[in-house]
Image (tube, rainbow, N blue to C red):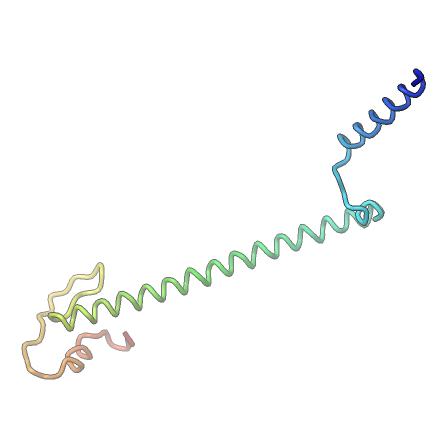
Length: 121
């Protein structure tokens, strides 16, 4: 192998190494696009990412609302179960001076009297 062959191989290797450092690996279809189209595509991708992030936040809020509704129903059911065990139980964080009814009227009427006006649960 001559010195010229060695130098040519070395030059070739250096050019390839310099190209790898300067440009990231890109698919051929992106390389074929003109620079203006690539810049436009960056803007489109950025807008799509922002849209997806907004949709993600909306979905998180929907899940949080659904979880809160389920927990509220679970708390109401727990209070109802406690009622059946031994009388009314105040909602968490509220104080009451109500005395459990001592009459023999059915529990459903007793519950209806202790529920807030206009409330369904």
